[in-house]
Structure formats: C-alpha cells, structure tokens
Amino acid sequence: MKKFLIIFISITIGLLVTTQATAQFGIGRFKNDINRTGNWASNSAANQSLRLSKIKEMADKLIANRIIELNRLLNRISNDKRLTDEKKTSLSSEIQADINGLTALKAKIDADTDIDTAKIDAKQIITSYYIYRIFVPKTRLLITISNMQTLSVNIGQLTPEIQNLINTLKSQGKNVLSLQSLLDDINAQLQIINTTLSSDKSKVEAVSISAQDYQSIFVQVRQDLASIRADFAKIRKDIGQMRVHFNADIKSSIKVSSSPTQ
Image (cartoon, rainbow, N blue to C red; front, side, top):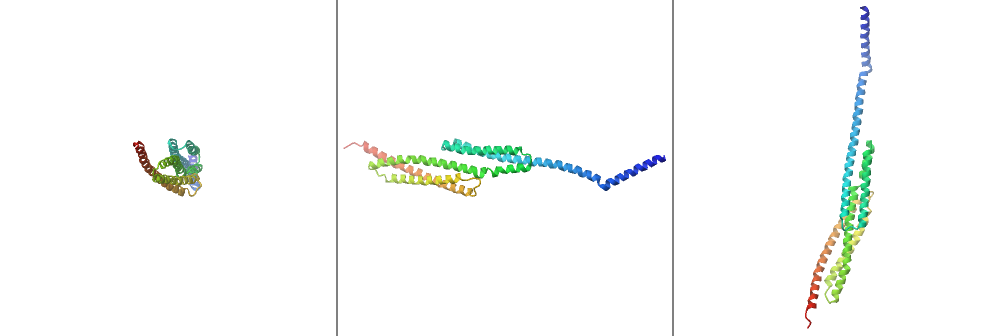
C-alpha cells in the first residue's frame, strides 16, 4: 500500500512539473501560433491565387474589348467602296498586327504564375498598344482622309470635261462668264482641299505611341475635315448651278438649230 502511494505521489508531482514547464516555456501558446501561422499561410496562398485570377480576368476583358473594336475597323475597311485595294491592304495589315499582338499578350498573361509578372504584362495592354487613344482614332482619320482624296480626284477628273464644254459653248457665242466663274471656284476649292488633305495625312501617319501632341493633332485634323466637308458642299452647289446654266444653254441651242431657216 505504501509502495502504491509513493508511485501515485511521483506521478502527481511529474504531472505538476510538466504542466508548470509547459506554462513556463509557452509550449501551448507556441502550438497555437504554429496553427495560426499555418492557417495564415493557407489563406495567403488562397488570396494570392484569387488576386492573380482577378488580374487575368481583367486583362482578358480589356484585350477582348480592344480586339472587338479592331475587328469593327477591319469590317469597315473591307466594306468601304471608296478605299483602294492598296489602302485597304495597308490599313488592314496594321490592324491585324495589333490583333495578333494582343492575342499573344493574352496567352502570356493567362500563363503567368505570379502576381508581379501578371501586373507587368497587363500594363502592356495600355502602354504598348494605345488602341483607344491613338490607333483607332488615327485609323478612322486616315480612312476619312483617303475617302475625301478619292472624292477630290473624281471631281478633278470631271473639270477638264466641263472646261471643254464651256469652251464649246463659248465658241458658239454663248455667254459663259457665270459657268467659267463657277468652274474656277471649283478648281480653287479642289486645290485647297488637296493641299490640306495631303498635309493632314502626313501629320496623322506620323502619330505614334511616343508622340506627345497626338491629341492636338487629332483635334486640328478633325477641324480641317469639317472645313473640307463644307468645301465639298460648296462644290456640289456650284455643280448644281452649272447644271442649270448648261441645261438652259443646251435648250437654247436646240431651239436655234430647230428653227426654220429664213
């Protein structure tokens, strides 16, 4: 009985010592810290994965929107009947190059495994392409300029024929002063139009990502194009007035030729 009492006392003392040592050295607290650290690491990894996923999702959306806009431009160019085949090829190749570049960038971002790399790659959507701020407005302006140049060329090809007709009427003794004045006005307008379009085309084509004043160039060119539209409207008005004069002169010639000889 005494022996069992001694053993019981020894075990009790051992448990007390162990408990005191555990409390003294903070072993229990340390275990809790380990558990919390493990949970934090697990949560941190999950947060990192979520952030990376969000970056990729945002980048994919930005790229998709830009590619949609570029494809709209391709469709517009393809259906534009006034653009020459050479101009269509030139503009389309530039657009397709950007589509290919953005597609490759998307694949790179989707394959990124860490946040910092994904951020760097995602920034290239803005810093390397400038689709909305530069490329799209630049391309649209070049399309408009090209179309206006085509219209100017078509009108310019008619003016020699009009001049020949005026000369014919003049040789018949007709008063062609009004007709000649209208044609001279058309030729003067065309000269201004051609000079302005040529200058604006060079300015727009020179715009690049590194350009600091691209916005002011776009504003100025748009103002020029508005003036040119007004010039074309004036030319249409002149042509309308010339048509009235020609019809009157032609009817007069017909009456003279059909009247009986005395």
